Amino acid sequence: MRPLKSRRSRLLATLMLLGLAGSSLTACTKPGAEAPVRVGYSAWPGWIPLKVTEDKGLFKSEGVPVTLQWFDGYLDSINALNAGQLDCNSQTLGDTISSIAGGAELQVVLTNDYSTGNDQIIAAPGIKTVADLKGKRVAAEEGTVDHYLLLLGLKKAGLSSKDITFVPLETGAAAAAFAAGKVDAVGVFAPFTTQALKRPGSTTLFSSKDFPGAISDHLVCRKEFVAKNPEKVQKLVNAWFATLKQIKADPAPALAIMAERAGVTEPEYKEYDAGTTILTLEQNKQAFKPGSTMLSLPFAAKEIGNFLQEVGLAKTAPPLEGVLQPQFVDGVK
Image (cartoon, rainbow, N blue to C red; front, top):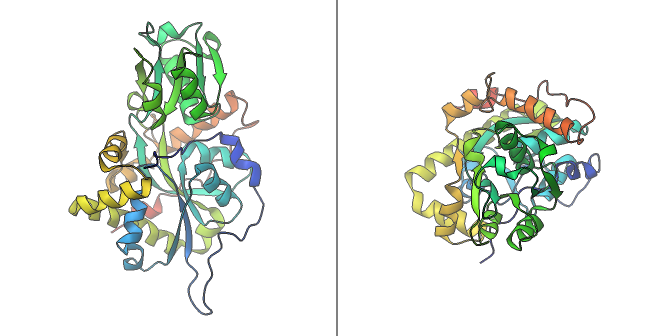
């Protein structure tokens, strides 16, 4: 079976198709029929439950027609949203802020999950602490959440990017380079963590579990669509929480649906799912509130904006006013 596919890609590459119109994902609608909401998703345990939503008819139960579009390439889904080929997409907060920095008008309406272990900084034998990374070659995909995680770990240990030799590589290539002994450490996400850890004696120095909220995943919609269709957005969010109830009430069939959609075995899906924390309704409501940690989306959005500037992927602070729209999780009955 196929491995769970990559969801992370270089942040600013998502901006390449901004403003381009496309019709390849436009659903055909019968005259007089309500146009379906075009929602994109890809292979990440926080988003794959949407397949359960579809298969169990929960969009229909909530009264919203949806065309659910699967993307083998996560980057393609972001490009489709930015090009107006989707109304909403499943994507990270980091990629969303990056798109906004490039001119996209997007809004976050739901938090699906936090990565709580699926993103890792893995080191070669002999590197026991973060301090041991000083002077070492460390690979990650530049501008991604794993690059961000690396910088967070360095900062916590009193180091900075200047204390290492950063090797910018696409995530799959970074994992391969580490496994082959070409770099001393690597920042990758599941399933590339499995590949990297095949290097004999390698260990995980730290992971997203050590930085709660630093890597979050969301349902993100075009601002124009939200303004014109708030009732549809509310029904989408309602359907998500109905899905979580369905999975909890009848987990075995749901697991089979999700594993098949991901292209992995059920045990493999459980393993990757363990590093992802799906947020409850109450946790969603709390996440949208102001705070002083990465568990607060307003705080996290500003920190990610600062990161994009620090690494040269944004010239100025991204405009964040109105990006977070908590009224939809607040409106779930």
